[in-house]
Amino acid sequence: MDNIPHEVLQQGGFIGPQFTGVFFFRDVFWRVTIPLVFGTRAVNAMDGLRMMPTEIKQRLCSRREAMREYLLLWADCFDYDIGFQGSRAIAAAGSFLGEMIESTERELNSTITDLCQQRPNSKAIHSARDATERALKAYLAHHANLTAARAKNQFGHRLDKLMQEVANHAPQSPLSEVAKDLGAFAPYDDRYSSTTYTRPQLWRAYRLSQFTAAEVLRTITGRNLRAAVQCDPIFSGAPGKPIL
Image 1: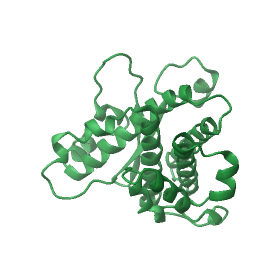
Image 2: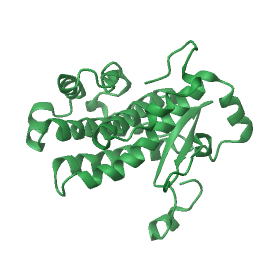
Image 3: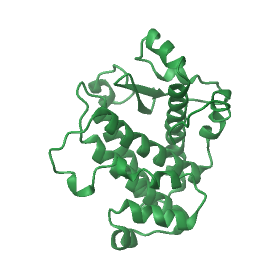
């Protein structure tokens, strides 16, 4: 969380942002801090880039497609943070849904931690894949009564099979976009290899996992800041398609 020492955070008593994502710009993974919001207080998406110097923020704001991408990432982080808190209240204690929600949180945070290093850790590509798998299983647990036994026996770690089941349940779901980009992830069996991935490759995998986790929680809680963000004029009347 910004520059707060982990020793302070581990002691507890710190009140501040509960979730921090990352945005890739100019070959750097910039932390995106999601604030605690109470009531109807307005928030500014650019305030999330606390560590980004003013001149780089200005450069980001001057690039329409980059700003689109950032706003969508910020909205997904915001929806994920709010959705995580809300979905925990919905999931029954000890349920498979609850387990998958908590597991998604752990894997997503592992991904982000691995990216926020002086030398981003290639392990992030595997954590991103795991977060996506858990999120899809959470979706099916909530919407199609998927059980732990069926998840293990029918789907295992096959993202393609999970995506097909999601499509069978909701053909028009925004999650269908995820199925088109599963190549962003390294194969499951490669997790113990010494393969090194580039920063753009790591960004692509994280971005997909952040969107998936956020979209799944949007379907559970009904909260959707992303839809409001997409009504911004920056998304209309210009060439190019923003990611996800």
